[in-house]
Image 1 (spheres, rainbow, N blue to C red):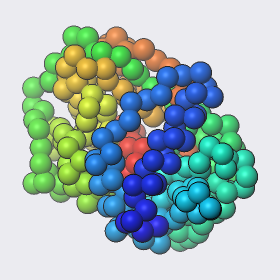
Image 2: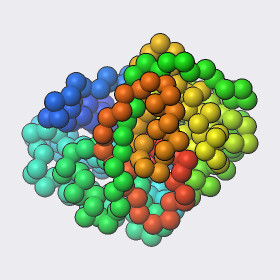
Image 3: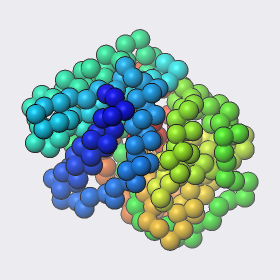
Length: 276
């Protein structure tokens, strides 16, 4: 995948996600600002050129797959196939190519949509599937707890320390990319951090459950009167479920968090779909 592919790759991703929502009888999720989404793809092409792939046909790009590696942990950041080419074997071929990038990794992470084909594929790769919930709605009665503030680049050492504790590897410059995308870093000094943007929780990691709850409350408070979304709530993240109920969010069955190998405690942790 080349940086010149970014615009078309993003368009394919949006078409694929809209098609998935339609097949499940759901409204499409609002599309992100293309400029911000392009920052993500360009960042990953630069950090993981050997994990970034496209497939082309006479119409142009037909599929996109992006995998990342951070300190020995592999993750699948994106796998989409143009709707008219789905079930053709193209997704399997792209997944096989990105899985080759996992060779020698001590852990693997995938956040999966509820698409049954994706779930089967990830199970066949040997990952354990942990079904997840989403929390959606305008939060009620949330305020930022004392001791939590907005952060910046100077807080990256804390994010790395927490990441290594909870998932076995730091995100590193992925947090910088999220800040470049206009997202907000919330910090509980010495305890944990969260990333939020457009009302959605993008990432949360903490050393303990109380700190994680405070950070989630702060992220929901940051949403204000906007609709918020909290994703990837598995059975290991009961603390997040309690805060979502406290905020009056609606719970829906979503996809699955798929794990393999040494990925730390993975709790209290809500991963990023893009940066795992």
